[in-house]
Length: 132
Length: 132
Length: 132
Image (tube, rainbow over all chains, first blue to last red; front, side, top):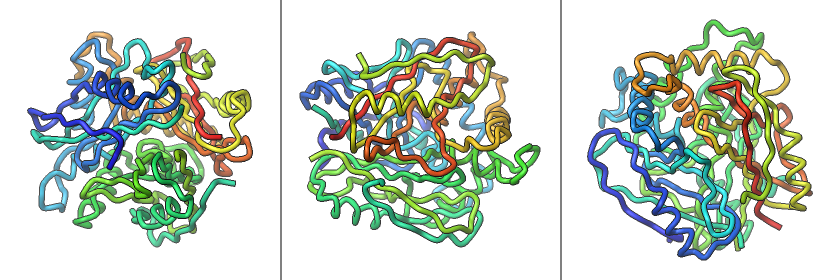
């Protein structure tokens, strides 16, 4: 069993959901003062990223850019979601952030996002910490 | 010297090779019960990802989508493999997975893949563990 | 406060800056013998990658390939840098490398690069180590 699990519900096919405060809750619950936190997605059509949380247009543009780079056409996989599998490998299944003084260290404009590429679905996120 | 090294042979220019059981062997050999495992590719035209292992069409589609997003044309590098270098930075040189109870924790449909983008070649994979 | 911070100045809008020796300095300063080093970018229009450092054409080609995959057009975000935000999520906010014998373990042709996608700017890089 991974150290901490939380669940989220997505509401559209493609969507970025801010999970920063849930990650920080997990860091606090683990009692970690200094080390690393890994935020891991156990699904194959969803990913984790870190990006800007100020202007929601950034998230809209990011999803549009991914759709242009990976158009969902000409694929063989019968489930029709090969674009989602590809975006997952491009963005990546996890992020690793630094923890100091019991706090996840993020830049001024950074938040941690769950990236849904084949929703809406009920999804899980796993969080692991290492350090002291 | 990295903690554990294993080798694989790829047979095509682009190919996804399942290395999940070799990673689990390295976790067991390291005696790690709880922590993180990092699977690292020391090459610059190959990467590591986590994705679906049920329908092989997913891997075929993923490689095709990468080829469409990064067509190998108009480049300057004389070795003719700049597409492979680019795909490597997009997919990433490593994955980090959670270990609990001595087991690499993966979602139901997830496997760990070595991504060959300029084969066929003999390749190395490095595995490091941290935790208790 | 993250364990180690260093700063760099970028000189163009898009640029790959080799930070390998600065990362190794941070590993040495931390006194880490065996474990992991995480190189983390606290900005949302810049990323970290590992790739070839022998032929500078590889870096030129990589930046051109990213520009073709994510053309900066048709976006809504008023700052006009949604391409940079997207490239950041594709390449990723950090890399994790293995440390053994006090040395960052890299493949023969690998270096660690700061990826500027919206420069020129003054930028920070954070480095964290875990292990023994």
